[in-house]
Image (cartoon, rainbow, N blue to C red; front, side):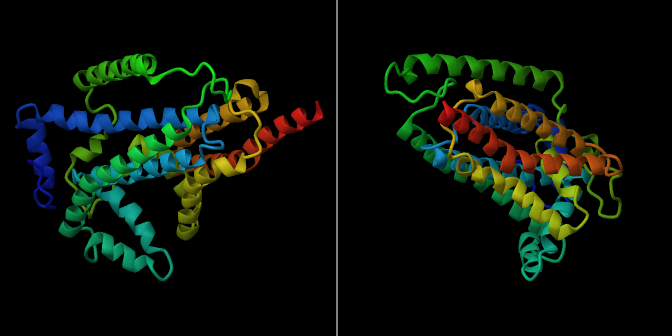
Length: 331
């Protein structure tokens, strides 16, 4: 209601919400930190799904819709990150959108369509603000489809056993369990809001956007850091876009790369369990690399970690599942 999607007033409107509007700082911090907690819960959900094999047959479409929701969350969060019109917001938008312009044939047309002109200006801010408002409705619609697909085949279990016997009903068992988890998350988030509402933010973003002054170190929000580390590990722009796109698309192939698994959960698969934890900590390492300056040895470490990410998804996970089938067939 109080935000003004105009390059002359966007930053001041944010400062007004923060400093003048009654409890405006609280609403804005709730929105920003809520996005971070949203990503935390989704990342934990995705890693849990990988560990327990929730992506395997017959739940391939369930996994794919979940990845689509995650990608839409990334797009929505990026659009929202630009709206405060601080230094980090402006230059993050400039860096990411300029990469699209390097695509052959269609890159220039796409970037002009995104910008609404020949540079980031009022039209860009209006478009980003509108899309930031509309995309959550699309996420809601796909989330409903995601839940319907879940109810078609039911939830998996930590043991990875497929059976129609002794199923646990949603009410009251999982309602109580999930309600307890929601309360814990809300309590910690509210504590964070009143204790340190800018913990996930950047001080540079409290400086008005200036296209003549580039920040010494451009750092996106923490949930973009693994992607940012992959993107900057390649010096060629087009190749960097391709590698980043493959980084995202690879997750869509998870169910089909591991379709020969005979046991769903990683609980009883030592090799799979080792690969999973290696994958988990490699993703965290990528996020740490993305927060550091673009200098050696961090560039080299980012390249190594990016290679490990692809090697684990395309080689190690299928091999770990294939090893289990080999042992099963042998005995």
